[in-house]
Image 1 (cartoon, rainbow, N blue to C red):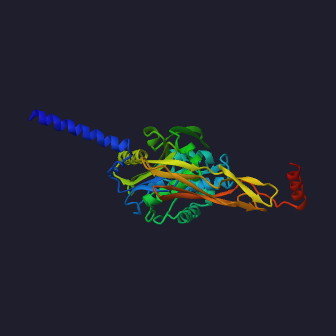
Image 2 (cartoon, rainbow, N blue to C red):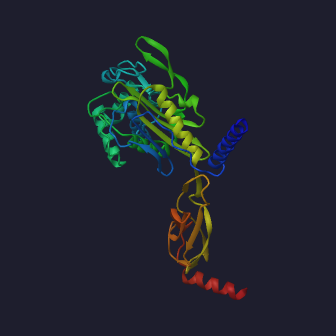
Length: 389
């Protein structure tokens, strides 16, 4: 009996190693972790592909995760040249009156736009959020209208914003999917946000009638310290929302967005986001199939000043796949020639990417430069050159 027991134990150990080998080496997908949070979603950032979701469309209070949209609009306005980071932002009575998480800005105090964004990103400051909302929109109400317009533009179907900071207000709701959508828009369009969201500790200087004083900032997002590759993004908690988090991390050219809503406690929200991120990184990969502007060959030009020109990819294409899947195949279809005249960017063909017989992406092949039609004198010169040769 003892011998049989030892044999069974040995077989169990062998089977365990076989399972580990098949999961990690052969790329078999490991189970999705069980979660306590009421809503959750895991999204790959470059493609927007949802890798895992649970109750992702329920509309719930998001608390300070709201500030992702606030930050998105701030960066949009900055990108359009509407303000500069060193511009001074004044604090109104309304902004200074915000409760919850704050950096204790005083009425008529001024801070640079950069420091206001730092306060929002690091300390989740409600007062700084409203001050920036008023700075950009003229009033918080006008800025909230901008937030809701942007939500519609992005296809956030379960979102209604009532304020710029996330304090509990009846009807101020969003969903895990919508949080992932706006998180993706922020980190892919404005990757410089991580200059703020990865700050662990910093300070600002209060300059008021009472004098100057230093105020310490500590990041509310513990992923920055706890998780390798963490890039952000935003925490949130109120009595109505419980504990929420949009966590982002990047490893090996793949960036993931993990969102939980209504987690039972602060520790659980971080643990469950890390579990989802671990699962995503363990089972998926992103490969750059082609880069925008990559030279793919040459094409003949009919009746042009040049006989041939380079052709290039029109855009970046990244392919998301499970680890262990077959290699991505690339098929180029290139026109025989282009007829002058034409401009840079003229379509010259197409690339299609497939994996396991399934299309994974496609993009145009275009002219790297324009070409004018040859005139009679240039034509005669070419003919004479050929005769001389």
